[in-house]
Image 1 (cartoon, rainbow, N blue to C red):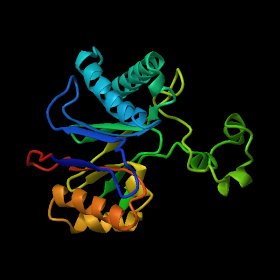
Image 2 (image 1 turned 90 degrees about the horizontal axis):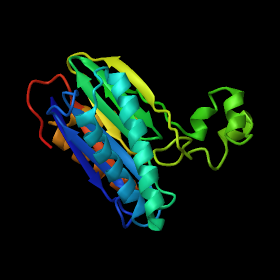
Image 3 (image 1 turned 30 degrees about the vertical axis):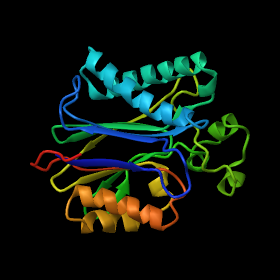
Length: 254
């Protein structure tokens, strides 16, 4: 597996609240781990939320007795959610914090990942395809009218142009119960994975991301060029990026 991860504070923010972690070595029952998180909250709260959540995830993976990837992901995300809520309850400066999370592992030639919030996982081969679904008000437009009502009574027609359409509907650390979306995808040779926070996806078009990844010499250059592009387009947010070629023979650089 070739893999590289990096974050950047961007051009407008003073604090970097994005956090990435990757390893191609086993961690608990997983043979590898790729995680990206985008924290939210006060000056330091978002920074804490993203890093704390990923570190809890790593610790819980080492302890889990489970062996099915989907069940493991659902369990460790739930534990991380509860622990982040507990941490916030102990420190008034951390009140109201939360984080998005995409956590992935590749077992053999199968990709498993969990998603909470609007950070993304893309698959890149002869085209770019977003495998994760954004948990935002905008995405919920395509869901049932009942869910729209549950989110606050917004009519589907109104939601398309709603100023809050990018507000996430799920996050780690916000409610007692969080339901991650769990995905399973069969990979083939040459497939590449791009994981990122919205500091990249809101600043760089999918087609540009595809061209940068396919035109780069390796995963290191791909990550660096993606961050450079987001910053050159304005860099309005922190940028967290992971690029991996999971079925490549070489070991990672990160």
